[in-house]
Image (cartoon, rainbow, N blue to C red):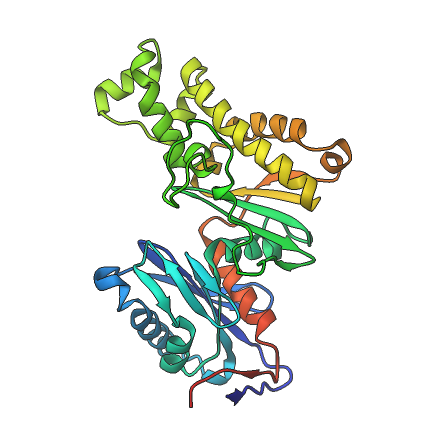
Length: 338
């Protein structure tokens, strides 16, 4: 264990590290949320991701040297990782996309950097970023949903992430929303929200039904390109294509209904929608809000807004920097290998 001592008046920097399946984003962030420098490196998932942590530490050391940042100016590292983790021990039970299983990632990174490290699920980190500086600013009770290849979620209660007893709170993509005839999810269940309202789910539904809608713009696109993306679906919906509109309506129905039900339990001040699918803007949020209202209660609806995320790709590193700033308190003993 090592005691970290900071001098009064020092400008402290926090290192945010957002580990993705293809790219690792990193940034130096002040306590005021200013990104002084950001960079990224590719994610090497070869051999079950055995080199990822060393790649991270090597890159941080190089950037610190390039910008002449001293150890005494760095509070610590906030690390966002996709997978099932124990935030207290820094232990990863499973991170499928990276190849990690039963891995003490925090201990290894602390040894390599000689800096304290705090770990969090990547979707939770993005939610914290939006709460600190993004669309959820000044809201201490909120739900953040990330719509991309899958669906991630972060639930914030009284200004911090809700983890639950085994760290699994906020797995919104795995809410069972279709009980009969639902598609199989990567988690092993069928009918998960992720199989319908994610980019992957929207694409799947489009491909399954396109040959029955020869009048659709999506049919013509499919005949030409041999594939359909969720972006194609939203673009065609904006042009008034009936089949595309029906697909968007279905995705919005299940997502809006799930969020409405969740709001009855949590009574959040804000619900933030992020991820690539959120780029559809009002084409998505108009029907989503309608179904949300139908599934919630009037008093809850009146006190809750649904907004699009603002921080984009920076949400994760900003949230990870918040972790460093808030959880690695001044003069606090932290676990570091001798």
